[in-house]
Amino acid sequence: MKWYSLLLYVMILITSCTIGSTSSSKEQGDNAKVEKAKVLSAEGIYKQNISKVVMIISYKDGIPYSQGSGFFIDKNTLVTNFHCVAGAERVEFKIAGNEEVYKGAKVVKASDDYDLAIIKTKQDFPFVKVDSLGNDRVGSKIYAIGNPRGLEGTISDGILSGKRDNDGIEFLQITAPINPGNSGGPVLNDKGEVIGVATFTFRNSQNLNFAMPIKYLKECKDITEINPSKIAKIGHNNDAVTLTSFVKDQKEYTAFFSLKNNTDDTISNIYYVIIYRGTNGEIIHYYEDIESEEIAPHLAKRFGAIGFGDWYEYSCNGKTASYEDRHPKFTVEFRLISYEIVE
Image (cartoon, rainbow, N blue to C red; front, side, top):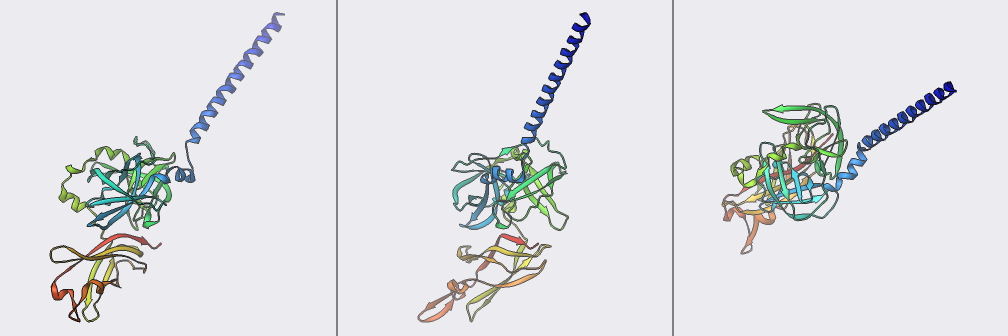
């Protein structure tokens, strides 16, 4: 009888331990599922964040000045690169993939050292989740969303391939492609949290792309504290494409100019602005255009100036005269807004 009772006790004890072990295993399994559920696919990250990413267009003299990407970190707070808005007089934006343009945005804080800017908007929008701890390990999966080459709402993936120090500033080295127009867009981890701001890339260097860690947002100062002369230097100064010549045909009242590709890549779809200024700096005329022809690396190509005769020539007493008959000089200003790299 005693042996039977002892056996029954042992069986109950074993059963209890098994149930406890099963319960513990189940609990661990549930926790693992919860942890696993936090990791998102590229599709999930895109759906979660695309409505929070914008295309930013800045203006100077009422004329397009530069173009880049940005994203909301609060309902009325945008983040972008400082070089995308520095020197601009007005900033507008549109949600990636939508046509409505929102005006009245204002740059309130910035950091020239960290190339970051904070913009306040008049409207409220959904915003991203931010991970400013910087705990993501080298080799972990990352994603970048932006508007490369004007292709709105593009997502690319890669890995965090390194954390680099340059004069005390940390940069995130990533393999996700960064192209013209990507600047200022979010770099996210596999949980859909922003860890950095896409900033620059080294072309023809085996995909060396860099982002500024989001933690540096705290370094942004009131925009009035930044030296205006420094802003002018940081301002839109993209010399990837330059105007190398401008030739007038006096007889036909037409003009031609050459654009040089200063990059190591073949480029096309060059979105630019040509501005004509008088001797006092006043804007006489300007126009925007996109040249779709390809330009090989470090070569130039000639194009016709659109509508040059519309303002250059005029009639007086039945005779055609030119602008130069009244004003001996005018200057030509070239602004590069964006371009496409031909793969």
